Length: 350
Ligand code: DAH
Image 1: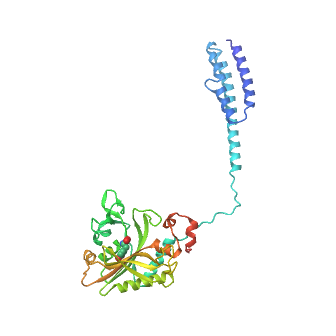
Image 2: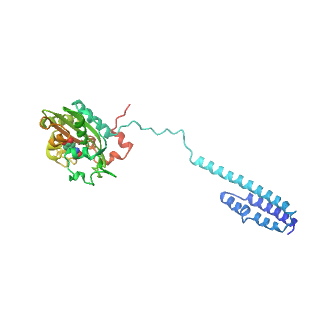
Image 3: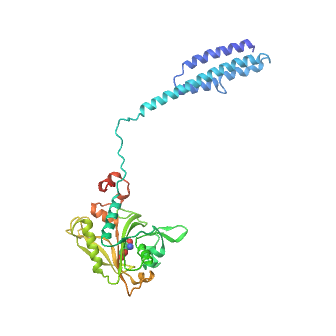
């Protein structure tokens, strides 16, 4: 092929490519054009392949012309690509436009969760009765959570299905109750002791009335002359203050390894005031926790003389108290982080 012929084909190619370029109507057509004209198997490459037949003198002339066309096409393709991109962005900006004149969503910070409100309210009530607030660790040694509380190794509460253990540390548990704070307080302080301890506890359980994490409040009162009448008096005072109505308190005999005697704390159902309803399963009573006189074994484990001192202890579920106060029937609603739910009960904090 002569140089004239080649230059002629290049000019025709240039013409045709310009016509094709003008017909491009979108990103797909542009990509097709790029492959067809500038790609490895494109028309320009085909023409340039025949350059080998030319003399060494002619070859650069055709090469220069071919490169000129290639550059032209490349610039045109780049410009079109940019143009398409801009149009695409403009379209998105239009369709995803933010109406800055709309009022913003209210930031709902500072709202207090009903569990916290209830917890603080209960602590305040016990503080008024002279109980000092204490806190203990949520990750606990089994000595405090079980052993010192007279819960032997074979006790079902230690079984894996209830207790969360820490992998690699067989003696470390997530505390299953706030009662270990009784032990910590007795070891750290000398009687007389009056302490109240709120906090998180953990058990491998989950349904409408059980959550793997929940809250308890614990109380401990130790002195030389303490009896169950004192315990009942304190509980009755707390119930009156918390529910703002006079509700009877009933201590129903039960068993806890760390108290003797032990009792379940029942109160008259706050919904029907004892008449019988769905919440109390028509019994007129609802259970709110456990209590009893501190077992001498616990005193011994904590270095307190059981012949000299007596004490009572109690533990209650905070969610349970909140549910009874606010009339809720599913514990799980507390943990769904639903602002609409939380804001119904919450105080605004300043
Ligand atoms: N720790 C017990 C529980 O989680 C509740 C309890 C019962 C606490 C009796 C006490 C008590 O202090 O005396 O089921």
